[in-house]
Length: 103
Image (cartoon, rainbow, N blue to C red):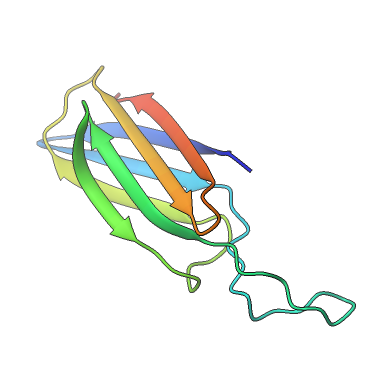
């Protein structure tokens, strides 16, 4: 289920604001389907944001994050045209990624 991430990055004075929407079911493993069978856990475990190849944010997530999570961060620096990337890895080893240039 390699997922694509919708991502935007915009310079705001001395900071760069990054907004990302990740498509992922984020199942906790506690819900059941209509037949009463448990739905297996499937959630994003790690999220990394990089700017020009340098890590500006790294987070560990868990099953408590909602489906199709939104991420918003700011970091110091960045210039229009610089590349920003967001990458996630879930508990099943699947990944998603998105890149954009700072506006």
